[in-house]
Length: 409
Image (cartoon, rainbow, N blue to C red; front, side, top):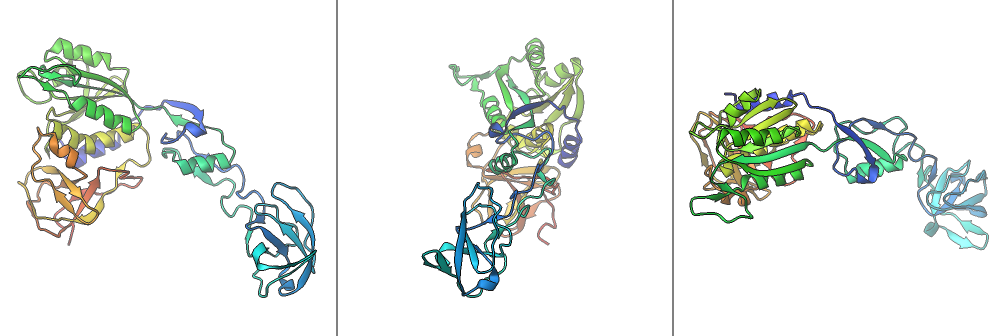
């Protein structure tokens, strides 16, 4: 058995296979870059005007000057600004030689072919210079970065039309349990609907995985073996149930018979002690508890960390938020405890009742706290760390997510 921290460290050190593909940049949203990209040229590519106005000499401030020519964006002209003259210029147009400032159109007094300039012209006002935004050769997208909409803006501004990304992580999901039925079938009074597999499949989809959903295997070795063998083209197999010590809990036995090697076996955690990770051929197999709440809270911490490692993401470390407890909290010491709660932006409130076999608390949970083993009691108002369940909560920097006894001291 390992501690939660040891489990996360083992996940962080895993070897992940690199499957890559080249895709059009406009389809790269949320994909993970498989190589580094650098700027092909300076941005802006040339000195240009930030305003519609007039390119002038600063020494002509307050004077009436002649408008010698007009420069539009996209034109390639060799004109220059002379003393006593101004060049009418449009936003984005190349600055003519000798330009010392651009005066906005609304700040001059027009008079036929001449204009009167305001007093106190500032040098380089309303001028944009080559490379001041992005310098040629600078990194514009790092390997392992998730490509966002603004990354696409940067890449396309550099004329990059295709990028190399990691292929979507191939995953397979199933549960074990004779009593489990898929949600689209009728159940008898002694049976249950399998909520674990659809939920984990949805969470994997949200993480950008290619998901195969297989519902559940029957409680016998032959069925479980066949199910696992059918999944071996996946890089990650996630299964729930069959991981404890019951008479029909065959998952460990079947996996070991197939040649699986444990990465870690069980975690000293509450809930979810049976959580185990194996390596089987080229696939990782994450075995989660069969109880719904225990399975999901462990997927939130262990499963997500594993997925992000196998996706080669740079931002794969939990980034906790500091907040305070809205109410007191007590637990038995001895094991790290994962606690679901609500978060209103000001304080974290642990859910009143969150037993391993429950489904109801999952809908209410907005964040979770990792309470370290030795913690017994925290008072209302104490400072704690939480992991948000909504939105991005991962960073490229490793952080301590545990609520240790001195977190607020």
